Length: 290
Image 1 (cartoon, rainbow, N blue to C red):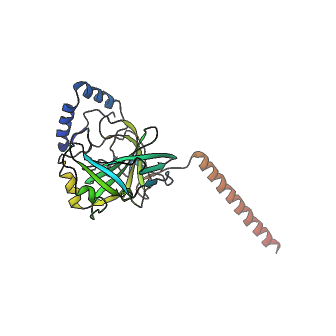
Image 2: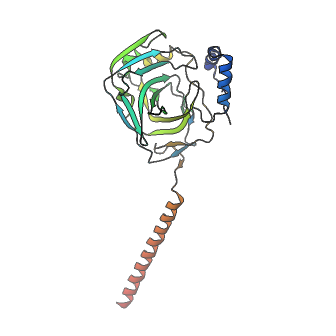
Image 3: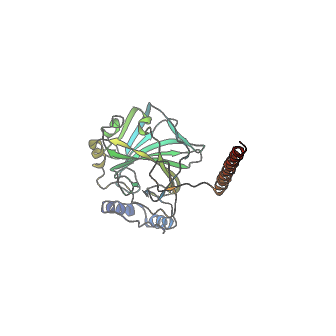
């Protein structure tokens, strides 16, 4: 099933789609529609127990994050579909990175969506954070984390207590600890997808962390009240893609060994059985002599 530019919109996103057409020229809108019609690996998606595969040995996530860095927080005009809402740009390009599968990606910015874009078994969290990384070849990796209502988040308070209310405002946050964005438990869901804003480019590696980020109801409301129509794209078809997870007990499918592994296992079992049988036979023989 191919997606198109006229992807399903909720009532809250209708205004955003109208603004998008006014933002792009007719030619640009047509080009975007044509491009999307040929794309089948779009984001966000609904992550469920039935469409994920358990893989115990996923490549580890090695984060290197500065505990004292400067941010420039902007409001770039949501609910326009081609914008994200409040975005925190990392001033020092060396302030954060993640290494996975032997590749290192540097953190450029993190931002939030309301409501959450990715779903977990159909459940929609009130917000979602995206940390955007890029490698030396400009390949993108996004680390997502759901936000749930809970305890007051002191680390994010310098941002959420002074959110820029207009596109002309810039908030400078000094001494921000990037480690506060990452949980201790790095179990995750991983798949290949796209940007969730135009031009919806594919080839983006997605890593959605399973452990949500706690924020208080007041902090969540401070963000969502600025963007009453939200800035979240609708769920896109999976189209046969595989979602891998190392979350124990979540997936109904597990990665099975290669055929060669099965052959070796079977040969090993046969050998063990043969040895055990010989030992029993020898014991019986010795017993008859006695």
